[in-house]
Length: 379
Image (cartoon, rainbow, N blue to C red; front, side, top):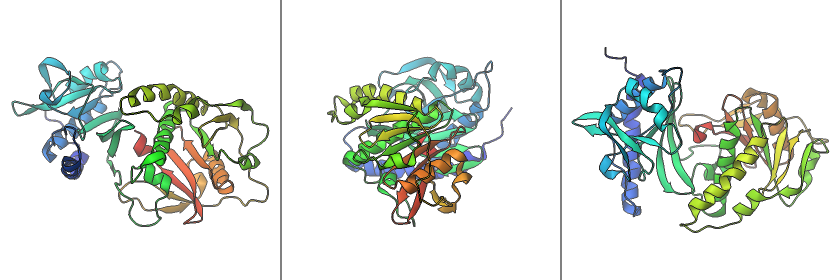
C-alpha cells in the first residue's frame, strides 16, 4: 500500500539542494579534500520522506534513531556492505536501526538500479556529504561534514512535524550579531574565539544530555564581582578550582593531534555538563576553571529587576522579539537573565528539560540582555 507523502519533504528539498550546490561550488575552488556527491531535489525528498515515516514506527517498543548519508560505496572508506541492499523503506530502516544507532555510524544511501537503497554502514564521510539524522520521533536534522576537526558537522535544517527550520547562514537585519553568536554560527570565527565557541557548544550538548535542565555561568577570570550576584557561600565550591578543562584548552594541538585532543577533552566536558543537573548554577571562569556548582543567583544590591530581554533564534524568518524572561521557561531563565543584567561581562547557558537551550549575554549595542535560542545548532 502506498503511504502518504510527508509534505515538508517536498517543501524543503529544493532549498536543501540549492544549499548543498552552492556550498559545493565554493568548496571546489578552495578545498583540497574530496567532496561528496550532490543529491538532487528528488533524491533529498525521498530520503527525508522515508526517514520521517521510519521515525514514527516502533520495532518491539524501540524508537529508531538512525543517520542516513548520501554516498556511494565507491566514495566510502572501509565500508561495511550488505550483500543485498535494503530498500529505502520505513519498515526496513526501522529494523536495521539498532545496528547503526551509535554516534558516528551512518547508513549509506545510494541508487542501485535506479532505486534508492541503504547499501551498508560507514564511519568516515567526505566534506559536504548530505546527512539526515533521526533525532526523535518526527524530529529530523539535516547536516553535513564541515571538514573541520574542531566541529565535525554543521546543521543545515531541522524538521519537526510540519515545522521547517532552516539555519540562518548569516544574520540579516538588526540586532547586530554579537561576537559570540558569530562564532557559534561559524561566521568569521578564527583563532581563539572560534575554539571558545566550540567549547561552549560542547558544554551545551553535555548540559542537554542529562535531561534535567541546568544553568552554567561563565564569569571573567580576572574579577570577583560575580560573587555579588550569588548567595554566599557556594554550596559546592571547589578549592583549588578544578582545572582539567582549562589545561586542555590551553593546548594548541597540531592537525595530527587534534583527534587525540578531542578524546581527552570529552570526559572533562561531560563531567562539568553533568554537574548542571544539580539544583543551582555551575560557575566556570573564562579560563574554563570550575569554581563551584549549586550556586543560587541573587539580584545584586541596588539593581532593578529584569523586565524584558531581546530574544533571537538563528532561523530564517525568525524576527527578534522583546519578551519577559519567564516566557522562555520560568525561574531558571529569569535568574540567568538577572545575572547577566547585573554582571555584564558574564555569559549564562540555560538548558530546559524539554531540550530548549538559551545562551544569554549582554548586548551593548541594544543595551539589554540578549538571549540566543540555539537548540537547533545542538541536535
